[in-house]
View (cartoon, helix red, strand yellow):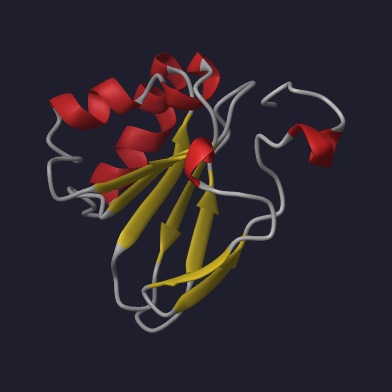
Length: 121
């Protein structure tokens, strides 16, 4: 629905993939999952819903179960030079910012002192 924030979480196996549709219609994909689940679940959803371009793409970290679908996005032209891309190294714990009039607060990042470990998961 126009004017509402929408979040769609996809079942992509061991990784993650979530689509954010901002109230103004702009889109953000957070992680893609592995390539096969991306092709079976995420890509068909985007196509069925007329989403042929992503405004933002975020990688929570570089493991394949979170990022393998990126290559498909590029091949299909869904991301391009106008897509803003971020990864976990660009944020710190408790960062706050606004995108498309939606406020974000970062709870979980790469910082060792937050987890007590250097494991990016």
